[in-house]
Length: 295
Image 1 (tube, rainbow, N blue to C red):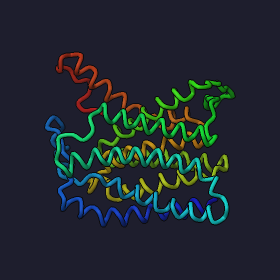
Image 2 (cartoon, rainbow, N blue to C red):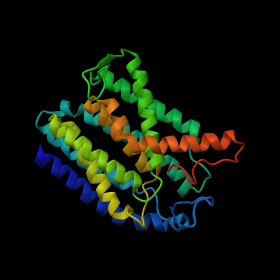
Image 3 (cartoon, helix red, strand yellow):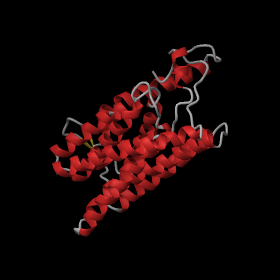
Image 4 (cartoon, one colour):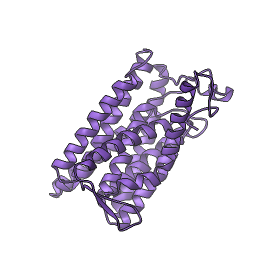
């Protein structure tokens, strides 16, 4: 398992680094650059024009390496073991596709907006429903919700699916909101990836180990180009993909509640944004709680 883990993490890391090096000049030539709001601080304006949509590189790296893993497992008659991993990757990829269309429409087509907020939520809801139905049909979901660090299990029955649906939508978008400053979503998710990797070795969960390796390899490779001053941003393409993969990992671990601890930074970022927008609108666009949100 250690050799598998290192091989997958290293392969995804190297592929991400290579793909970013190849794609950044292409993004620059097509002027796929970040737009910075005028209300931000002066130093933030230096980021204007930095290529975005860089998340597509680590998505391709992860899918390519996982395709090789799938072939190896299939040849050895172990394809069925990959179902939880495949479903988590499906959740991540479909959310990444939503982000890609949004980025592509705004940045390449130069239209004011891609999906509206309502359209994005509807599409994300469909993706979450497809994922949960697939999990149920393949018998990869447990409706008894465990409270972390206790021996308490709450049998939620059908209500578990409602809880899981809200959790998926909430955290996928929280990771998206976290991606605000150089390396923030990548570095936070790198730490989350390390957590899931440790859990994979503790509980000897091979599929969770692959997800942990993917998160570590992808975010570490992306950070090579995303540390301050960032040479590329991941865009909604990358952040929605990472959100889907992080949430998927909690279901593979069968500990969805653990995300409230390991994903606390995502929660804080999302909460600050909700507070900022809510107070600003309720005050007649006069009061801002924070200088910028997410904090």
